[in-house]
Length: 177
Image (cartoon, rainbow, N blue to C red; front, top):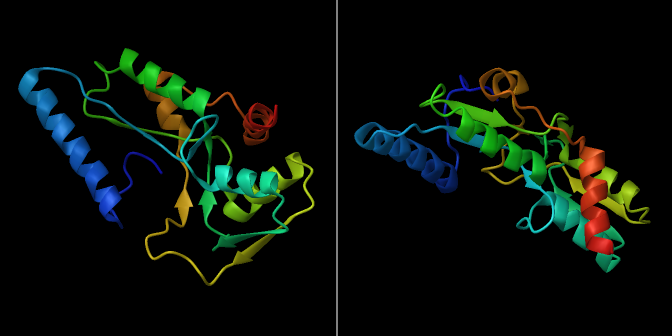
C-alpha cells in the first residue's frame, strides 16, 4: 500500500491503530512534537509474536505431517525484524521533515501465504506438506499486505536489506541451534 491508499479498517484492531495515529497527530500538534506513523507489514524474526512464519516453523519442528492454512492465496511482504528496526530509527531522524506522514514499510517480495509456507518447508528440508483451504478465509482477512517501497526510500532513505529467504534462514538457524 502507499500512503494515499484510503483507510478502510475491517477489524476492531485496525480501528484502534487508526485511532492511535489520530491521537498522536493531535498530541503532537498540541504539544509541539513531530509525529510520523511507521506502518510495517508482517514482521518476522527471533522473539516475534505468533504469526504465519512462526506457526509454520513450529509445525515443522514438531514434525507435523501436514500444515493446514486457511486461504493461501492472500499475499504478504514479510519484513525481517532488523529491517523493521532500521525503518523506525531512520524515521525518527527524518520526523521533522515528514511530520504527519505515514511511512509504509515491508519486505521487498510480495508472495502468497501458500508460497511463504512452502519456502519455509523447503529451507527446513522438511517432508511435510502445506494444505490450503482456499474457501476458508477469515472475514477480516486482508487479501494483500505489501508496501510501495519508493515512498520509504524517498522520505527516509530506507529500503529492506534482507530478502525473505535470507531472513528466514537466519531465523531458522537461530531457532534450531
